[in-house]
Length: 292
Image (cartoon, rainbow, N blue to C red; front, side):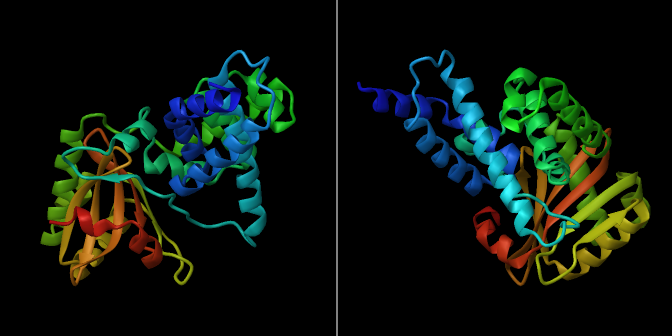
């Protein structure tokens, strides 16, 4: 086996890990795959003779590519997005795709990814690499062109944002499902009292409606409950799925999926709902396969 073949074998061995890193940094599986391909091209042209830890080395190359992609993405936007819900990882309730399970091995809810979208590229990289993948700041700092203390400060600033806006969901999927099913039933039945009881008083609903319509942000149990009633009136059914390892739901009108929602359930109440209702994005998610 020559050096190129050896490096290619190492890339395949660590592809799941690298995809997990890139997905958390970019919020898109397709862009994550592009980043890994670019990282492979860069790695294949580099001298690996003195590389002691290939996994860590490939991780830093992938992270550098992702950082450039994040910076380029920000430069292309004329103004910051009010709400952008990243690409969800969707599976059926009875079992996940092995590739998806690898990407979600440490769990990364959609609510967390939404918050990560609000960070600067440097903050996002420092937080993801250190807090989610335990890379030391001595390794992160050179990627950012800063010293370790500055990288630590970036991660700390990002951590405060994340902890305040992306609480960890209930790990018990059975409890999650019971709450979501009760929420959907109360929405369809017009049971305001039950609906409000299932919602955290400070719940935030974020809906990414695409470029043609403004994003929707609802705060508080009353506002979200009224929004749920309005949505229930236009949907003929909802189908439960797994969204990023948690219970979610697909909304259907005239037999066609129109939205997918991720629920964050904590202590028996829904604290966040993140919805993709952009027709173009919904069409690309191939949601029909998850409908009954």
